[in-house]
Length: 294
Image (cartoon, rainbow, N blue to C red):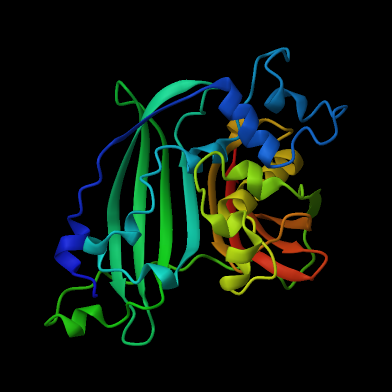
């Protein structure tokens, strides 16, 4: 098994047509803990359709829409899928998501980078979410680190490799953060989140989690991503989700449901910088975060 550059770059992903409902939008918010305090007026617009002004949608819900499935597991990908990890994620919001709509997810391999034998490879998947008329709502970029696939260009007769990615900027850790946001992660968060897109048993079955080297099921990285977005919107956007325009982050370590996530935020001339840690283990789990808020 080895990556074939031309074949993988030219891979055709069928368009993913998806209709989601207000119930799905509320389930996404509930999976991230909104509504855990039923008297919190800031959370109610995300979990109750009867709120004045209508139901609001967290922009990171885009990450669970138009998903092409676990395509890397298919034999023609050439990827050692057992050893891949989700390394980074970015979201650009072109138009806020409504509470319900039909959209089309258009996926493609944007970059394929060989880091060298024993150093892994990087696959960047771009997803565009459009409505049925072609209006663009969001662009997502998922950076996948394929730990077992470094050296594919040399092994296959000198295939090309795309240039290295521009690294994400680090947070300004020489000074204290300007804002801190703590969130308790629901114990059943992964069980709720997996109903939306990624039903990998790693997030539900303790036996599978132990076989993968974890003491118990872990939270989806994209759920932690959504939690960070919620913190940024609460602290920096007056709870208005339409003000978040961009969100970039690197995944640094897994999170367990039931832990407490602390998002540390720095105001920066080019936007907001942030990182997140779990307090119980004092472990950085998201790093190199950047957000643009109107």
